[in-house]
Amino acid sequence: MAELQDILDQIAAEMATRADRGKVADYIPQLARIDPKQFGIAVALPDGSVLSAGDAGTPFSIQSISKVFTLAIALGRLGDQLWRRVGREPSGNPFNSIVQLEQEHGRPRNPFINAGAIAVTDAILEGYEPKEILGELLRFIRLAANDTDIHINKAVAQSEAATGDRNFALAHFMRGFGNLRNSPERALGTYFHQCAVEMTCVQLARAGMFLTNAPGQPRLISVERVRRICAMMMMCGHYDASGDFAFKVGLPGKSGVGGGILMIAPGRASIALWSPGLNARGNSQLGTDAAEILARGTGWSVFSGRH
Ligand code: GLN
Image (cartoon, rainbow, N blue to C red; front, side, top):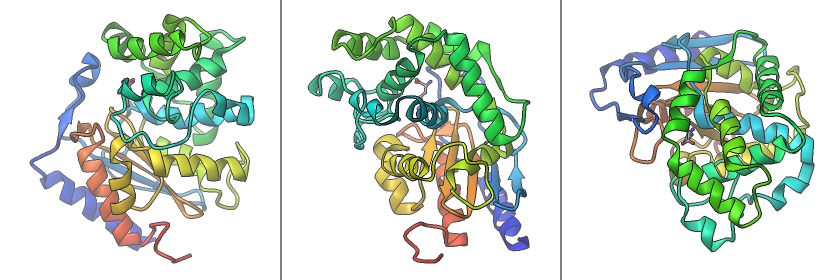
């Protein structure tokens, strides 16, 4: 796989030269302090190896990438009942938009926009304590990554709670429509902590392997659920830029405002990219560019016809 390592090295070298690196999320004060000069990429392969380049060993806040893991847990717990609470269509709106929520009577469009993810966390919280749910999430991620050194950064969670007015608005709105069973404080307290999980690109790439359906991987969820989660990632994983990501990259992906992207090449690889500066749509600017170069270099787009 020397060739793949060359591609990663070239991508990291090119990203190091980029002057326009986007803007670090500043609505979460703890994230505003992160140095935008960083870039990392890691690719996990079915044989257990992980290739990487750049700052792939630096932990970052996974933020909305956590929504993939909570969706997997929620589908395991509730099965198709979950879709009563949340839809599965692209929203065409920013991740924290409230507009559709009113028009659609408090049922969020999909599990990856904030409202949808809050509803998913609320659903798995029923009958449990926030601590138990966060423990289950960490166990799931650590098992998937085969790495116990993965933690929640409480300062990031608290920082977001202190400035989380928009998420509180979404949660109250849903509760007003009967689509939130816990109090907004309880649901969001859990949600902010799940978003504050920190991982390196290497850990995240490993953790995504269960979504590749590649032979020999730990079967954390069924083959069918993997297929469905990847479909959601392709359609909704980059919010109102999901169409553009599918157009340019052609792989299911999920971004977070920490600047991370988890991307799946079904049957082949799990890829993590990270650069903290965001583009206008709230997705990693260099991460998105690097994903496009990687997809072109490897021919891994699911639409390439190569298998
Ligand atoms: N914790 C962030 C929020 O709710 C997650 C958003 C994101 O990563 N896009 O605003």
